[in-house]
Length: 232
Image 1 (cartoon, rainbow, N blue to C red):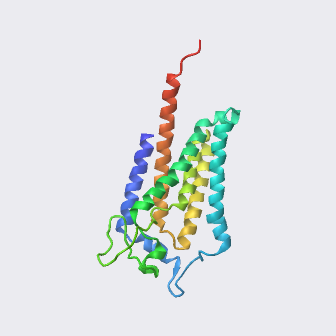
Image 2: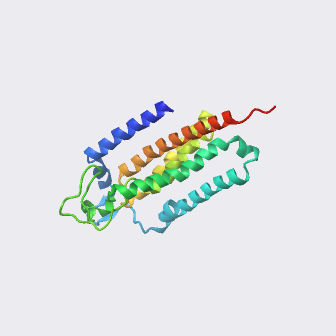
Image 3: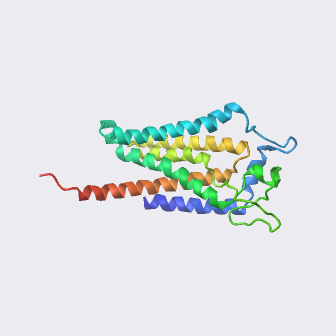
């Protein structure tokens, strides 16, 4: 647990500094924007991609979380649920906590999306977390684009790693969740809604939260089991 947390924190810190003090976000995003037509690689109003990668996947995610919750509440005595109670609890807590936490960060960072900045035809200057808006720029309210909220649901599914016992299934679950997060995050990049760093930082933050949730569930499960009176 401790090793994974410190590695995650180190990755978060190094990544944050790279994105803060380089223009890598702009370099990547430039490939997704056509300066002649002033259009992104994909029209945000395209119905099929929006249905599959935004509206549809949000509904599937909510149904999945609801299914896990109902399983733990109403079917907890079923052998399959009982034998996987800890893993399902970690998944449920992660799928609720991760999007909420990322959403909170979005509300306080005040960082614009690519489509909002002047570099791509918007009204906002390009700023990072540690930089400030120019004195000549005035905004009426905070803008909420960093980190990537939509991809947080996909990355929250990395918690499925703790649902399985075998290394093979753990690996499949982790890779599948990361892939899902990046497919969703990639969609938001190509329509101008997020920079690469927005999605990358969401991935690292999500994993750190999931590890913490796993630790807390382990901790309380252990102490609860110790308090139970022995049967005579």
